[in-house]
Length: 338
Image 1 (tube, helix red, strand yellow):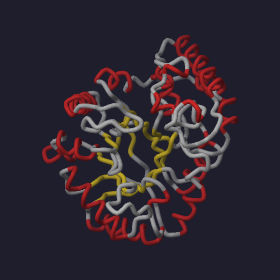
Image 2 (image 1 turned 90 degrees about the vertical axis):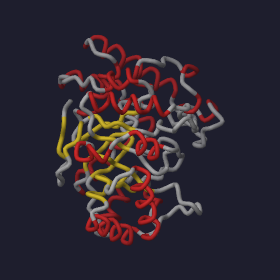
Image 3 (image 1 turned 45 degrees about the vertical axis):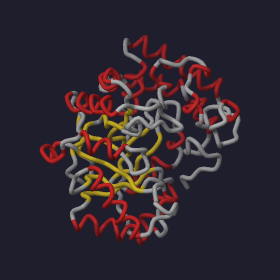
């Protein structure tokens, strides 16, 4: 396993991070099927044995923090595991923008659920999850001083959002963003701004919810919940809210090209897609979700691709990148990342 110390911190993290959106304790959501707690436990244990020391969760992920808290023996190995979590989208009164009091309450709840005294990286889930940027920054700095968090980061912050945070005095360690070969919208202005403000990128959906694993070669093979993104026509599923035409033809054309490039290189599509991401500037770690122990193993097979292969993979998705434009939001017609 490869590791990287996040710039501006002493957090040494595996370049593959275990995402736990699927850790739902058997309660399905719009995207993921039910996952039994025992399966989640087996996945965590396998991830740790494969060298993954970085785990990402969120209060908004259905049961995820509770499942992690129940299966991780953090008291005995806390220093060996880097825990990232997020606040937002789970206010008991349905409030969207969290106040300082709300952030404090959310953090307290996460600490109790995760059964730990601190969180290594505490993130704002979306820009809309804070009522006032300056107040949020002050509260996060206070929580650092209290020792309840070691660092704070952001998720889904666009260029203007990052500038607003910087104006408010914020110094986020990371920005967690949707990024993969099929979804490169952040390359337009978000990636350059992240580098400018000193926020290292954590890439989520690095396999585009399974599309880059070689498992799906046509639209009707993709589970309905994963057809909610803007890559698919809004008529593909009633669960979609973007109302757009999607880019299904171009998406599967790109997948076919990627598959051939990886086959010629003698690697799986999963390995090729993750390795390409980790070769991109300012990307520290890729956040992979797993529903089986076998997927854990597959998702840790990182390959040192050559610059020539990197360019071939990029060229295979250039048409799709330009077609999808600058809106980096996977699900919304008007980006929530400003």
